[in-house]
Length: 429
Ligand SMILES: C[S@@+](CC[C@H](N)C(=O)[O-])C[C@H]1O[C@@H](n2cnc3c(N)ncnc32)[C@H](O)[C@@H]1O
Image (cartoon, rainbow, N blue to C red):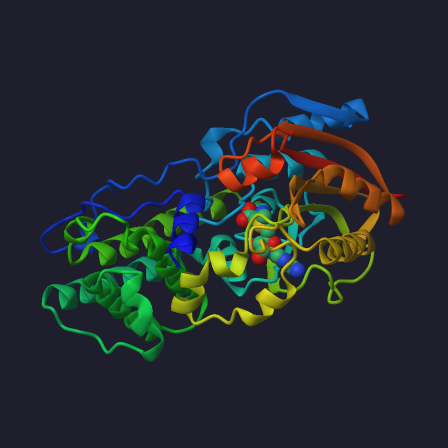
């Protein structure tokens, strides 16, 4: 459990919430938060960029590796942490360079929805899917602007819920603890867990419409922050009322991001269509429909997206079994991912991309060198070879070093370069 927790925190850039108001929290006067949330949330960029293939296309791809740090939390990008997020600026530049307004953009590994938010803001018709129901909720919430009334209801409901939960927490009123949550005292200090149950119960009383979904995502977005750290002193520093205060603040931040997204989106652009689906079988999408496919599939043996978000699945009452069954590239007992299945899966999702792309369309993949059966794999060579077999042209790529920071990966890569790549494939016209 500890292993999951540490990893989740590290990837999300979150730490346990400290400080915050000691006395009654008044969510209508939420002061600025003193939480360190701005730690590096994306892969570290920088260093020389290696280019290969068509020079003009490679130059365009190189721009995707020069992110604008100002965009990291723009629109709704800062709302919810997510492992392996694409940098918003990579998505923005790729969409501008490789598609036109009104065209169809697909991300079949959409995760928290970075590509879909940027596609919407650029007036593209965005379609996304992911095998994780948690990812689909986050992506929907980040890209459903709600309109002025919906946003107002979001903020008012969140404040009301926070006020009630904080008051009950300060009065030491114990909410009923559901059966599934009895083990959660290992993850949270008990007064924190009780306040979070209180919040969850009140959220559960709201309608399950778009605003209700946004409230649930706000709870999901604060959970990791309040998990036990190694330092017992944290218990005293997470005062009663603090989780509720954060919850209300998160809803306000989301409402501001959604308003900015609405302002940026060209009139008449439809909301993205987002659903739970296995990227290896996109049977719900017809052939030749997409002008741009922009996606970052899992890196081999790097994360397990179910285990990684375990606490969120549990608290949101989401099923994990299907994700565990269909997930590609999941990290497996330190050996990376199993070779045969990894390759067969890659063939399947790439051939689905080839099928649904229009003739001449760009398929842009952000891929990273990973670990397959205990050995390093050069992601770009494998993708390009497979693409050729499927009748796609590997036009260009750019690569940049991402030296491993964890001991396991350093040992596996043992001095060999570990890189992240952006690969441009084209469906033959
Ligand atoms: C690198 S993350 C994508 C992050 C995303 N670009 C973002 O900015 O948040 C890879 C995603 O692939 C999803 N995934 C894994 N196996 C899948 C499958 N078979 N079908 C669809 N999605 C899958 C994971 O749930 C995860 O959300």
